[in-house]
Length: 179
Length: 447
Image (cartoon, rainbow over all chains, first blue to last red; front, side, top):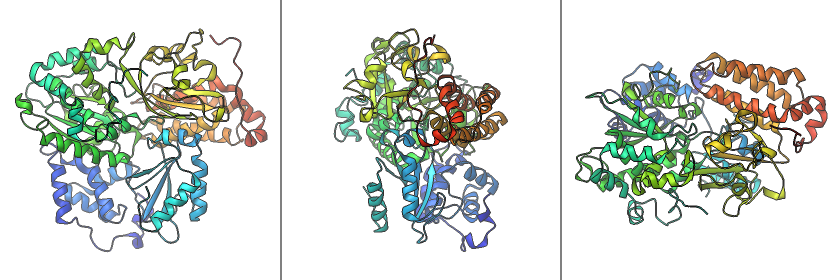
């Protein structure tokens, strides 16, 4: 478990709770699985919880998800720590995950990673001073023919160039979703 | 351009909607199967088609289906493996994004054949926007009576839903996928028991790749024998190839099995050659885990015959001078690319993605990454090259799932064909940090 979970400044001050609307969505997911097998929905619900509660999974969030599933918290930690998409630390408002695997590397992903880092004055894994952007690298995201690329939220930004990166950052800063 | 069975309508406007898909012949296979065929007949057609698993292993789909246990009163499941994560592979994504109903149609017919009343599409979490596309299409299919109770009055009930992963390459391995779908860490299971006997929730389960399931649609529409007429020998039908790397026109292509590799790389209908007028240096034809081929073994086999886009021809020469069709993730390297750097990059991928369950893989992939890192960065020695081979031998065959082999093979192949370039990184340390090695010479005898 990462150190943030013992760092009290990085904890949720209020207990995270799904809205009635979100709870209804969770019930729909539960119904997709046979009686007694609702735990199958846990990855999806963790994605929902991350989105709802600040873009990362605090220990409070995971404990709450355990309550929703009526399982032990350890069963949630086990899952949350295994899958790399889950953020176990707070992140910036937008997380750039730049693919660094072979096919992207052949087309210059290393220089894109360096360029974003220089532009935002951060290293891989860090968040910009204004709290807007976190830079991460990722393993193959299945966009090899459209390399280099980065993912931000649900959106894939492909065929990246330095100019394209500039446009993307400008758009997010202005509160828009880049094309 | 050959026949296109899956992507025929990929550019029709609105093909992602039920109505347009239906107008273009969609859901005919469901009508045909549910109204005029028995599950056994559907299975028979798939067996006749010679369809082989399109995820990478190439195991005959009909045979896999025939192994499914059918104990009385126990539910059976069909799971679609949409956890496409093999570096170089992005074909399933294209199919699902463009023609989601094709996959849904295939799921219904396949589930009918297997007697599964519930099926799931397990999609990698990073493809979350495709999950939205699929769920929209599934809702349409329910609305039109192609999913749910008593489909088309046939008495067959079927429910289908989608589940996302959370970012783990290993969940493309079928038993890890099952674990993940049960809401657990994606640690592969020991086999036996195979999923066909004990899979999801301990029930008989079939796991098939997206493209395999989609291929069931034309097989039922036209008949298995028609499908088998396309292709060559045991490589029947069409195959989606996702081409990437240093190509003029990378992308997803549906090919008839049996075209030459030469035509695929250089032909006007396909990739149109190496980008920027460069020369071909190497090719990984089936996703990052298959052996890399040096330029002189890409378009010709060691025996000097044309290399074809088939399971057999790409594997011709075994690991000494061949590779594999794998997932169809076709990665092309131009003369400026560094093989040591790429081998290190792939090793880093496997070290990152090892689930950690088996020591040989957990430790071995990490060691390979470290040793390759120092070779690439001019800090290695000649002994390291043999050390890699030794680590390889300790991983290969000693793990529960094939991730260990997948990590070991590319390293072994790179050293086999590009040993000169590895040695150059040691003997010319400083030079190797300034420029790339370039092309390798064709050996006098390669057989």
